[in-house]
Amino acid sequence: MTIPTDMLAAVEPRQAAAWLRANGWELVDVLPDRAATWRKNAGAEGEYVVELPLSTSFRDYARRMREVLDTLVIATGKPAAWVLGEVRASTFDIIRLRSTGPGVGQGRVPVELGARLFGLARDLVLAAACSAHDPRPVYRTRRPPEAMEFLRRVKLGPPEEGSFVVTVHAPVPPALQPMLFDEHGEVPFERRATLTLASATMAARAAAERAGQGGGAEGLLDGAALGISANLCDALAGFVDGDETTALDLQFAWAASRLVPAGTPTAVHVGSDLSPILREGARLLRARGSTPDFELEGAVVRLDSDNPDVGGVAVVAGQVDGQPRKVHVPMDAADYRQAIRAHDEGRFLRCEGELGRQGRRFQIDRVRHVAVVVDDED
Image 1: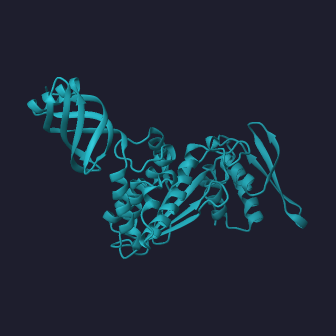
Image 2: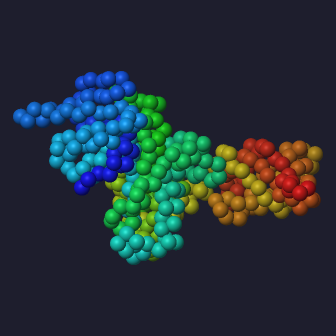
């Protein structure tokens, strides 16, 4: 198979260098801004040598990259397309989410199901990124900016054969110097997010299996430090709901540009038998977990105060986890006056605070930024 010129031109020098380094090649010489010479011992056959161009702006870049690829094909004994794919993936953590079930046939799925699976992949990646930044039992409204920025940088790969496969490419900065794996501060956020996805899905599956065997739900409820959240459990359950899709296989291929700790998962299987357990775990995590920066907006349906000059409690009908809920909001005198105004004028009230449960009801504590929502026309 002849590799098209445009595909060779798309290979970045840093990708090729990362792959060479990870596969035992030695950097022996560098001509700044021009080329780098790499070699690898071939035993009795001598050695392989490649001269890697260092700028895609060179007019003959694609030709020179083809020469590099030809040598790598000989050195590896693999097809050119395979080698090129490995080189281009060397700076990405690649997560493959393979769904199987009655609704999946030879890689083709109904449009509605396909859209749902892509949405679940997004939810799963985002849940892991949130936990990598700030482990919590549940993430309700405001997501950490670091997690959202990571999600914007993550790319979807081209379709692959094998049932229905969503392929996620997460860019990982290369390691510029050796490091110890317990030096968490030196691991870039992109890698921490993908490592969390791998460890959290593995931990959630194990905890759900124990719960299903009568071992209790503690593994799920106490697993925030491992990356287990209500959001992650719901996303996993959505992939294996037992109706159209009955199993999810996650495969992790780690970027060659940065090593991973020994024992890092490379594959996780989740079956439909765990779906109801994961759903219940998500429900319990939501009931237990508080949300520090929850934003509430809705109608004031009840006011309760013995002395409005001191303050009171406003009950606001808003949304929690996408469901209509009445939320109790204790307020001081100034904020309570805003609630009275919103109630009397029939307007929405907006506030922020820490959302939690008091018994069976939702309540926001540490209330701030209380304001009456005024329409633009007013």
